[in-house]
Image (tube, rainbow, N blue to C red):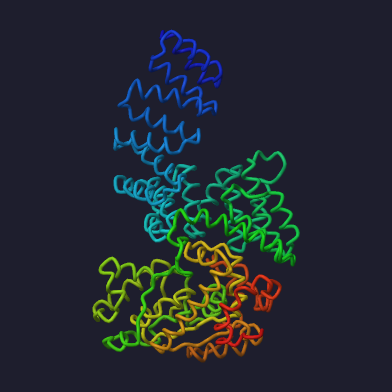
Length: 607
C-alpha cells in the first residue's frame, strides 16, 4: 500500500466519510489482500459505521496475520460482542488476555461479556483479580462491584466502593455514571444521587443522568424534584433515546401511582411496555396499578408474568434456590435443640439497655412501620435493614461449619469477638450514637434467633404479626432485591409454605430460648395507634411516647428509607392494607390449608 493511499483512507475516516474509507480500503486490498494496515483501516471503517458483523471477519483475518497481537484479538472480540456472538467474544478476549496479562481493557471487557452471558461468578472472580492488580483504579472497582451485585454479593460491592468519595472528582463522566448505577444497584441511594446531581450540574442535557436521577428522587420521596428533572427528557424533540423515553415513562407511572392516579399509571405502563425481555419489574408495576384499580384478574396475570421472568433471571445468580426440592425459604440459619441449649455455658453479656432492640417478622408484616416509630424516639437509633447475622454466621462457617451445628462450642472470647464484629458492621452503616439504644430491624432475623440470643441474651424482641394472607399478597406483589425472598415468592403456594415454615420455626425457637418478646399485631396498631404505642413504650421501658406518635413527620425528614414500604411510612397510620387479600380470595383458596395452623395460632381463623 502506498503512503498516498494510506493518507487518503485515514483522511476519509477522520472526515467521517466512512463509506469512502471502506471503498478505498477494499480497492487497495484487491492488490494486497494480506496487508495488515489495510485490513486494520477497513475494520475500523466498518466498525465506525456500526457494522460489527462485517468488521468481525476482517479482525479475524488480522489475528491470522498477527496471531500474537493481544490488541487484534481484543478488537476481534469487541466486534464479536457487537455481532451478538458472546461465546466467541469471550474466547477471543481470553486469548487477548493470555497473550498480554497486563491488557486491562481485555480483562474489563471479558468481565462485561461474562456478565452478559450470565456467568456472574466467573465475571466477579476475573474482575476482583483486576482490582488486586490495580487497587487504586476506580474503574476496576466499579466493574468488580457491578459483578458482585449480580452475584448478590452486596457486602463485597460495599467493600469495593467503601471509599469511592476519595476518587471524587472522578474526571470521567462515563465512569461517574457507571459508579452511580452500581451504587444504586447496591442500594446506596444518597451517594448515587450526589454523583448524578454533580453530573447534571455540569451537563444539563445529559438525558441518561436525568432519567436515573428522577428515579432516585422518587425513591427518596422527593416527588416534585423527580417531575422537574425528568420533564426535559420527555419533551418532544429533546433528543432522548427510545430506551430513555421508555424508562422515563416508567418513572412517570411510579409518580402517577404516588399521586393516587392508578389509571394514568396503567396507561403509561401500557404505552411504554417493558424495557427488554428480561424487564420483570415492569410487570410488578403494572400489577400494582391494576390492583389499585380493583382489576384483580389483570393484576394476577401481570404478577404471573413478573415472577416467571424474574425466575428466568434469578436462576443465573441463585440456581440452587430454584432446584427441585429447594426449601420454600432458602435460608441456611442454625438450629438449636432444647438439649443443645441446656449445654450452653453462661457468659458475661450486655445488659438489656446495652443490647439492641430486635424488630422481626415475616416481610411485609409492618416491621418498617415499627422501626420508624421507634427511631422517632430520642432514646433510640435505628438503621436500614442489614443481614448482619447472616454475615456473622458466614464468618463462623468459614472457620468451621460445625460451629453452626452446635453453638455451645463458642467461648466467652468468641462471643465477645462476634459482638465486636456486629458493632463494627453497624458503625459502617450509621454514625453510631452510643448513648442511644440500637434498633435492629430486619424481618428475617427471626430465623437467626439462636445467634441473637447467644450474643445478646438480654435483648428485647418485637415480633410484627399481620393477617397471613395480607402478608402473602403483599410479598407476592413485591419485587424483592434478595434472591432468597424472590425465590420464596415465586408462587403463592411456595410463599404460603415459606410463611408457615418460618413462623413455625420462630415459635419453636421461642419455646426453647424464651426471649423477652412482645407481639405487635398490625391490625391492632392501626385500629388504636396511641394505645399500642404506649404498650410498646412500656415494654421497652421508654418514657414520653409523643415523638413515636408523630413518626410520619420524623420519617419525612429522613434523607432515605431503604425498605420497599418507603412511600407508606411517611404517611400517618391507616387501614388501607387491612383485609386487602379478600379481593383475591379465589386465588388464596388452594393455599389456605397450608396457612390454617398459623391463622388459628395468631387468631385470624375465620377472618
